[in-house]
Length: 422
Picture 1 (cartoon, rainbow, N blue to C red):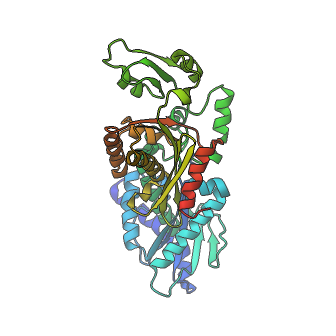
Picture 2 (picture 1 turned 90 degrees about the horizontal axis):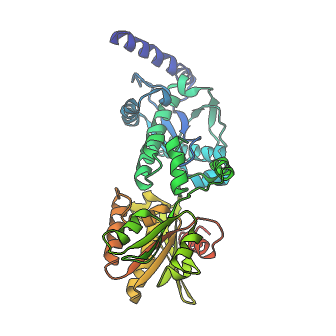
Picture 3 (picture 1 turned 180 degrees about the vertical axis):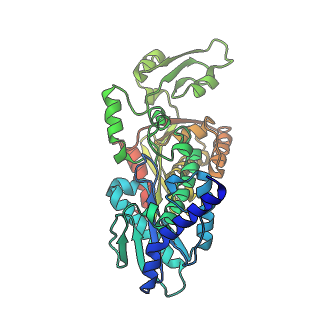
């Protein structure tokens, strides 16, 4: 096909895709909005919806179902659509909302948010007159028309599919930096082999949809496996004595240390016996303990960190809410600040040893300099921990979330309380 033939074909498709909207305009309908969503099927991340209100003279060639376009073409068209649209809006429902409501109702919420945002972009006093949507009915007082396979047949729905796709893809690429090891930049949260391998190695992240992982967990359990089965490393003689969750931590303790004694174990109880201890948690971790957690409020776009400090028989509860640009990291930002609250407490009290229990892998991985930090907050956090270690010993211990540990649950409650979510 020649370039001219291709352009003629695209022009004919444009006329065809505009036909229904043109008919509506002839009946007096002014602001026609196409709406579409992306991200119903992934194991991780939010569902995104976009609304686009196009002008009558919109004549850009190449608009089509976003799934049929290359990433480069989507990005080019996304910029043009947002520049030339009369209004557009994006709505999001995160993984927690999906788990709580189910994916269909969470998607509807995202769509309604997108409509509200698009209406705000129209001239004062004007509102969307008609919504074109692909087989979803929304509980709102606006005329709606359902168009099956609308992202292939209707121009404004196709445009909305592109805007939603680019926005969500950009978010998941950012999450790949926040949660390395799952290949989010490539799979966008869908269940690829690399994603499943990340789940087996590192467990769930705060952006995973628990309700979508039940079958995977059952399958892994039937194999006699677990979601984050890893070795532990016991060091009897080295720079630091103890049981470590990663080889990197063990290596720093024994590499170059004359007469080092260490061994890896699949069963933590065997590691405890090798050390000659009776309890890993009581004997391998000197100083005080802290359980940390974080939370994020979608409505206010604020996040909070919390720490439960165990100092002998004394329990100290710390929490603080934050409203800054780091909120883009959501719960992760809160967990990082929870760890910082615990470290700050020890530094202020002159305490020289702290064990931090955390349920998100990155709190320890960044703290132990095992993960690369790409974002400003994670870079600052790594530097902060490194400086704090000049004055005290800090150890990180990964724990499973929401399994009934009262201090972990208390930290979660404190973080939500700081945001007035409970």
